[in-house]
Length: 417
Image (cartoon, rainbow, N blue to C red):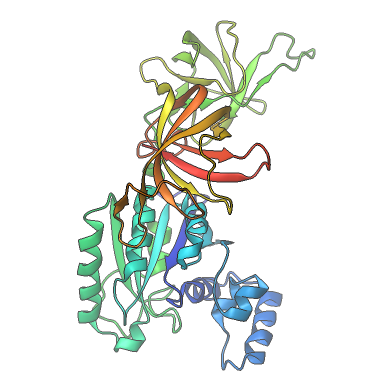
């Protein structure tokens, strides 16, 4: 059974002019998720630009530069809801110089929708977007073969693109791939089933997004609770209360569980789990709760409460796939602040092992300079241990960011391997 309040995040990626913004506009328009005043404004702009109907792309291209150039530059987030589910869409740019924007927009997604122009088939940028979806461990990928109206809704063209994509995805770690032939401009197979492609037996895109099973995407096995703060109300009702508050990163915690506090290694038993004024018997990711323990242990922000029989690795040496986000290149052996769950430490990039050539997906071991949009494998050393999991197992405890202490800018995002 589907949870009607379940939130699904999905990202759209594709080459320039593949129709990402039009697809999202069509999705919002046909599912009646647009306010009247928005619609009137877009209709006016469309008329000014000489379009016959509504230019659906204008619903997401919110920046003036994007509207003027007719391209997407930054990540645009749109929220909409249907009776079955809530959705957050990240419309990410297709250009190679905006790789960092795609990584940012896709980092929390349940589903990646990759657009392919039916006339051009799988191109370099399709491979790049599939690679980033695989790198970010996005559980589900929907390949939208768009502009089918320009190839006479040909089943043969669609099947050829499916086999092209399956060939590249077989070399990557993408678990669930689905394919939809569509015309975002005309609305075929976006919200409503296409009458022009009776040979396609699958569901239209919105139905696929509404019914996709995403509950198992969250890691329910490895119990991880990064402590954000210690609660000491010291009022009449809670004279001796000492609760550890935070957001459960993964897994399930129950009252009576034996737990270990890392990195100290002290063990105790969960005495209570509190959500506002409620006492819970169990809590699971991604709930924000407060826990109390049977024993009085010195616990502070950055520590992690885990099950005693299932612990993350505590280490100061990390191997990380790093995407460089900043205009300024990485400084050799410079110190950065590393932020991992609720834990902040000082860190240094010790070594660049290789960079990924984002076009060929090959490894370049000679170029060691990290510049904006570069994706590379690096070794990082931290001043104190971090409690880590492999990113493929746990997207929360396997991810981190680097912050420049001088400018306070986030300069890189990383996935622990």
